[in-house]
Image (cartoon, rainbow, N blue to C red; front, side, top):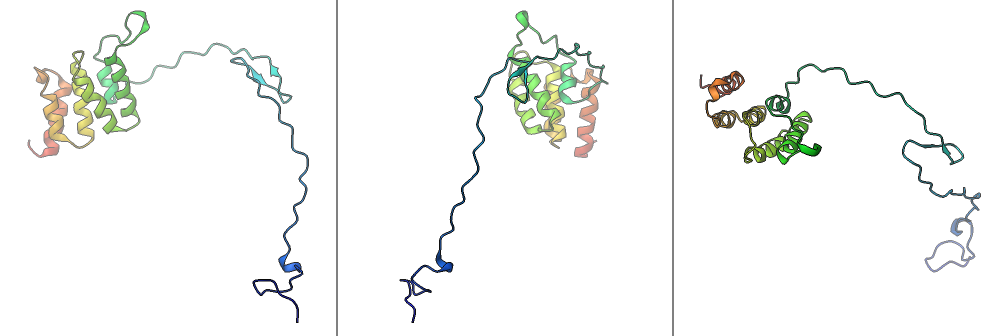
Length: 175
C-alpha cells in the first residue's frame, strides 16, 4: 500500500488534502498621511490640506417655548436668578440643573437623589421642596410626597402644594 502519515491518514507525501493554503500577496497598502490638527472651524479637503473656514450668519435666538411643567422647571420658576457675581453659579444652582436634567430624561431616582441633597442645603426654597414631592409622586411614593410637602411651614398657602397633596391623598384613598 501507500505510505501513511503519523496519524494514519492518506499519503505521507502531502497530497492535495494535506497541503497548506498558500498566502496570496496583497496589493500595495494605502499610504497613510500624517494627522494634521486643524484650527477650530476649519475643515479638511480631500487632499488633506485645510480649507478656508466658512463664515456663518449669527444664529437666531430660539423661539420662546411654552411654559414648561417639568419638576425642575416648576422649581426654577420660584428661584432667584441663578447667576452669581462673575458668572459662576453656586452649588445649589448646579444641583437644580442636575435635577432638571435628570427629570427631563425621566431618570427619576437620580433626580430624587440630587433633590435630597438640595433639601439639606441652607439655600433650599419651597420650590425645591415641591420638586422633591413631585418626584416622589411620579415614583408612586404618595405618602412620602405628602410628608415632603408638609416640611414647608404654611404649605397650605401654595395652591400647587394643595393640589399635589390632594392628588397624593386620592392615590392613597385617604380622602
